[in-house]
Image (cartoon, rainbow, N blue to C red; front, side, top):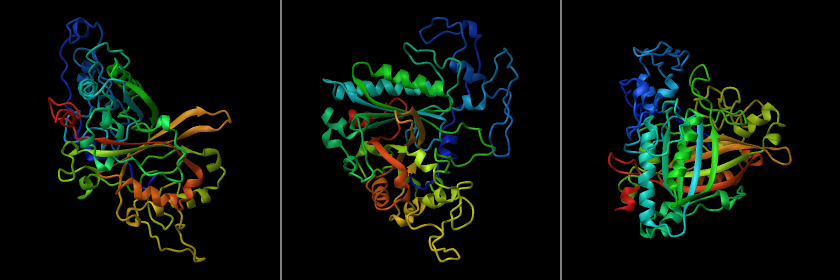
Length: 443
């Protein structure tokens, strides 16, 4: 868990908002794409009513009231959270710089016996078509479950990636990037192989739990006989508008988590996070590499610490996220500052000190995690923690050097356990008329 800020106010989320679809038909006579009357209001129609009467916003931009007045034909507009949409097509895949979402599903699939390159291409074509429809607030093209019938797109994003094993399964070993070589072993690893890696990886995020589940179910059905689920993990973040103004997320330890994330406004952001045309292979241009780790937090042990001890482990104030060397959350950490007794204000093994990019040769990664809670185990201990997802142009220059340094003396290591791991090549976004991964599978 590196000390880098969440992309909750990234420009990509704003530029991804799609235009509202104008209202047209009476809902009682609206038809499905096949022409059969639905008898109910479609997701597309609900999205079309959004914004018809406006939304009251607080000074920080958070929604503090909903537009409730009906439109001319009696339809009630969606709240802004439901109406927000992200474009499927673009230079990069959605779900990388998109603002953190309230609900997420991470799923890995393995191709079934006998399925190869042709079946994988057909699957990615189906998945891309379904993702495009659902992200626009439409129903799935076939056998829609109606789970999200009453909702707008709710900032739904779907992101696709390829694991190391995918290339052998499809006869594309020559196209496998060197950056996708397996991650090294780390001393903090207690990995469950059954919940690690996979041929294909899908990240789903949305600001409504039903919208996220609807996408998960639709993509699982689309897999058909070509692929089976290897593992699935479910996560959450704070809901938009739950705080008086936008702020960096907190994790389940109660800490503000992600203060120093690289930001899209920084001039070197793209070079750190996305693969350039010169870095190759060609099909990965504008793509990124995702490291996925299920990190169990040993909350019973953590919560026995005093507030002061917790702050010393992290190196930041729990209340504000400010460094122990002083200032506010955004103040640069003074690693040399000492207290009256001559002790370092930020302990030498504090997590925030160890993970600073300037302490790791400039290594940077864009963290975009979800928290998880999967119940209480047989010993009465919460199975909870962080679904760590980080993005970088090259994991050997991003995640790996930071994690190696954490292995050598991070104070937080006594309170966390890495239980699963995966590394996935996430190609650039699909242009209109393309599906994700087409340049690899048909190149």
